Length: 458
Image 1 (spheres, one colour):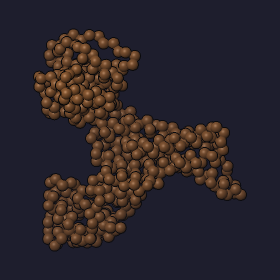
Image 2: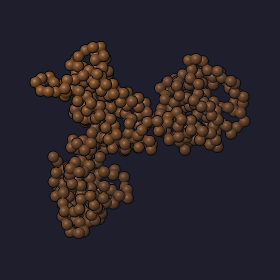
Image 3: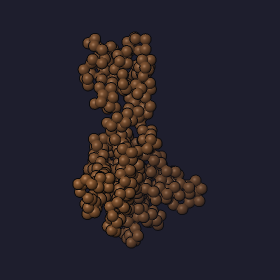
């Protein structure tokens, strides 16, 4: 296997830069680009301890002084001999060091190749490999905690327990069939049914986390709706902490959707500031209103904004009726710093959802923004599911659901009076789906698609 090398700290100038190397024979290669102050060859440096020395370019000239550390396989990240160089984060220095490694015989690592080698060498399964990139991409503390727990194997352990249970059923059946003369205990349908029910319960629990996983990974798609000049763009700017959207006293300023990601109550909101919803003859504004309605229909959360400094209108009522079609929405009375006009009592129809909260907010003074954070946090609670026990990718969800469906078919057949051998096909189908999930039997294209998400150096 080739020795691979890559810059692991990006292309911008930083205080510290890291170059990673991995592959059989990499210590001999590293000896050509690093001269330890202690005078010892690289392969004889104490493992997993930093050594100070000089980094050399392809001509053997000193380009920097810094630290190097070696990680002997198989107890390294990749499962093979690996090393890291920690030097000053000048892009020029890092490129020169990388070029020296190439001249010594290494090649450029492909995107995700270090982690891919960790998977191929049994250091990680596919759920842990996905957790690596989820941890890098995490935009909230909750997402980072969940990814860290998955990297520690929390999700893998759940799936492996189901896999082992199904494998025991399959192997015992084949043992009875292949060795009829041996004194092997026959399979009892009640034992199989109990094992299948327990496996199904675990998969039910994990699949119930799909919505939470989508929120952790992608955030909550949140539409801000209201009539023109209701204070929608001001609310977005207040939550974002800067003037992301244009705010004027002229109604209809926002004619298209404006998007911004913000943290609100510890939840990542993908805010969509929509065009004010009203009847209009302006062609461009009418297109914006149509997009506003589409944004509401596809949103996970709707913030319906009503300007309480102006009289409540039929347009306001229609907007609230639109918001009430969604399960999660919050009614926000804006411009709380201004004198308020009377707001009529609103009764909700049976096919409508009442608001999760009714708040009074001022984007100018900040009044009510804390209440909004509390309301959002209550709608998307952080601690409802243990960290790591959340399905965060469509691939995981698809494989788990296929395993669940196969187990349910097998259980239904068993309860219908069929013999255990008739259930075996469903058990093996579930084993195949679970094997895809963890990587025991994943096809090459699935593995490649996962590692395409990684950056070079990881």
